[in-house]
Structures are given as C-alpha cells and as structure tokens.
Image (cartoon, rainbow, N blue to C red; front, side, top):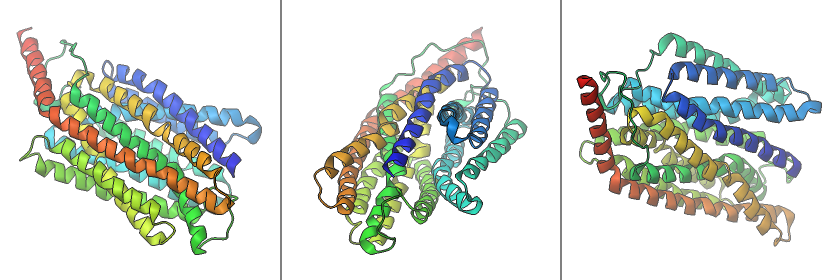
Length: 410
C-alpha cells in the first residue's frame, strides 16, 4: 500500500502546484474583468478535466496526473473569485450569512467526496465512476450561476454599491490584520490538510487494536473508515460554519474584534480535542471519533469568519488579489506540505519501532501531535489579528469613502 500512498501524494502535489500557480492569475483577472464569466469558465474547466480523467487508461497515467493539474486551475478560479462575488452582492450581516452558506460546502464537499467516492466505487465496481459524478454537479453549478446570479458590480462592499466607475484604487492589500489572519488561515489549512489525508489511515491502524477489521495493512484505509470520517466531516462542517457565523453576528454588536477572537477560540479549542483523539485511539475508538468531531467542529467555526475579515479590511477593488494571496500562502505553507511533513515524521519514527503493526500506528500517532501545536500557533495569529482589525477596517472604509467622494467630483 506504500506505493499507492506515494501515488496519492504525487496526485495531490500536482493538483496543489497548479492551484497555487494559477490562484494569483485569477486574482489579477478578478479585480479587472467580469468575475461571473471567469468563475463560469473555471468551473467548466474543472468539470471537464474531472470527467475526462475517468476515461484515461493505465498506459497513459501521466495524462491522469496532468488532468489533476487542470482541476487545480479550475478550483483556483472559484476559490479566488466566488467570495468576492458574494462581497459584491451583499453587505455586513447579510454578507456574513451568505459567506457561511458558501463555506459550509468546503467541509461538506470534502466529506461528501469520501462518501460518494466510496459508495459509487463499491456500486459500480470500478473507481472511474467516482470521477463521473462530480462533473454533473459542476454543470448544475454553471447553469445556476448563469441564470440566477446577477452580474457583480465589484463596488457593493461596505455600503458603497453606488460608487461610480472609473476611479481605480492604488491602495495596497497589505495590512497587519490581513497578514496575521492569513497566517492563521495557513495554520488551519495545515491541520485540515493533514487530517484529510491521514485520519482514515490512522483510524484503520487504530482499529487493529480493537479487532474491528482483519489485521492487515495492505490498504491505507478501508471503506467503512472513509465513510464514517466523511460523515463526521459533513456534519461538523455544517454545524460549525453555521454556529461560527451566528455567534459572530451577535458578538460583533458588542465587540468590534469579535471575528478574530472567535477564530482564536476555535483554533485553541480544536488543539486539545485533536490531541485527545490521537492519544485515546488505543483505549477507545468511540472517544477518538468524538474528539475528531469536536476538533473539526471548532476548526469549521472559522471558515466564513476569516473570509469576512479579509473582505472588510481590503478595499473592493483589491479583494480578488487579496484572496489569491491568502490562498497562495495558506496552501503553499499549509495543506500543500502538511501531509508530506506528517508522513516524513511518521517514517522517521517508524524506523525505531520493532513490531510492524504497532510501529506503523505509533509513528503516525506521534507525528499527528504536531497538528495540535500548529492549532495553538494559529490561535496566536488570530489574537494578533484582533489587535489591529479595528484600525485596518476603519482605514479601508475611509479609502472607500475617499474614492467615492473623488468619483462624485469627477
């Protein structure tokens, strides 16, 4: 199974490489051209590449890996453009609510991927069919985008939807709260990237101690483990995002620093939950599932909130670029490397173990502890964001008002 895992890591690496390289490009386009058209093209590319990859034979495996790169390009388009379209169309509390709906589907989509891929592969008898389901959703998404979403104005954020065109901002997207919150998002991405790849493997190895599966390590994980973890990810993602957005809307009425403080609490709370899920795995599989669910819930609190922070500390004309920069940083230093880093640590620790089954489990268990420390570090970054968010938000609003006044004179 080590060969299969190596191919999986290579597959992820190709996807993330293309994703990282194309995100700044889409950020540049999104601040200058029609965002709706760019988003539609990206989803179409992503869906077409996914469908096409399902027909590639083993003799052309290099084309399969290349198709993952095109999927990464398509993903970069909507990851960069979609939040700014929401910012164009909604303001303040409405924007937070709509962002929460959008970001619900990050963990939901991730979890659904485990469930659908496993179920469809079992039903059809071949993994190719798992790649023929998601393009159908892409086609529906493009149709709904074209028919239902109005053309964005790129100027609606923060109550300036009536700003006249023709005046371009030259303000930098760089501000202290943007930098610190981006580092916090990077810590989140590091943890979620490591969990997404290694948790099913970890749970399968943990089950060996409870006689729930045959003592065999020929596969990196079994289908039941993927289904359970996928279901946990879906439920905790929905509940976490809704809870985080709801608490943020209420807490902001009494504390202007509510958003980064909630993010800090989410990161600090997820760290001990993940640690307990790791260390209790040999004593109780049920406890492991419970604490994994709690850890993912606290991480999911932040998804919509961190996007909202970016959108109100960066002026509308630079939001796509800012989103692209944040995506580039968070994936490059976060989930692009965390699965490899955890794997390297696990391999290094396993060489010191004698028993193969016990050594494989213990090495991965101890390497996972790093995620808890990264979670605490991310919470610290969000506390630093809270120190500057009021000042940066006011500065962004003043810039918007200034450009509005200038455009009125013109």
